[in-house]
Image 1 (cartoon, one colour):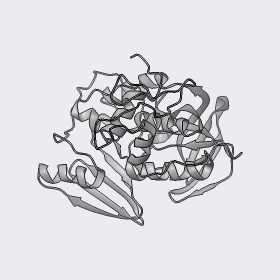
Image 2 (cartoon, one colour):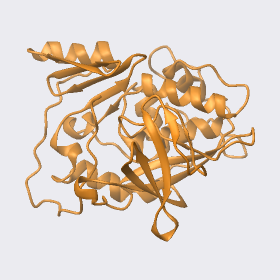
Image 3 (cartoon, one colour):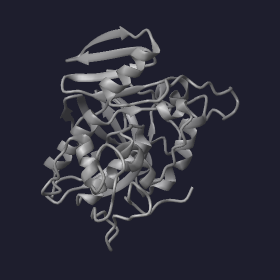
Image 4 (spheres, one colour):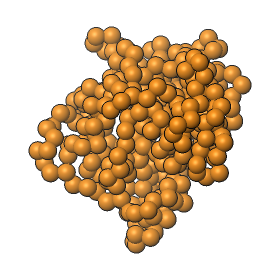
Length: 312
């Protein structure tokens, strides 16, 4: 796959890049949802309900991450709808902003990184391996997270809008003490070879490699999670987003509403009810109902345990 050079026009053919390689919004157009003539970054901000920040500081980063988690669902529906998703920045932006869909870590954090750079943040992609059952580490490039530098002298920060149920706020990457978040207590701990383990409530979440990466580096991990019968993303359907009071998750025909820690399940009967739930709760207008596409065992070898998106 040929990597794109950045946040280009959603319509194809018209670039919104300035001479330094950032999006300036001039000439970038959209063809859906009344976005014709809008710059890509402005359309992205509109997608998540955010105003353009006046400064690339930690307050703006916190607000952008929170609004992104509430507006853009963590979902793997493309895997089961047979949709071709290419790990290139322009294609990811087209999916999330123009088509108003979600995705999982590679898509969500890949697109979010492009937005943050346009807004003046300095962003580096980092690869992580997720801890599975028994503390077993997942494959290399199992997860992508973002190292973000702000212009207010704080940080650097770990920003992440693609790990399902996770920290709502960015975490201070150089801090080794406990960091309180509405979703729990997080802490970074030194790991072998200069890596960092991220713990939540004392439980290891993933191991972070601090060396800079580019989006193309994650193609192998992205391919694995979309094709392997051992990946949780091929085994089930998930669509989930934060709400002001908790979380909404649709897994197959089960809608889980979490409000202040209490979980309520609703079983949906007809296909029409499920499609309506995707539309009304997640803003996804699907032409067909996604169903789990079974991948025969042995098509892709077992590489490791992988992380399971959480509901609550």
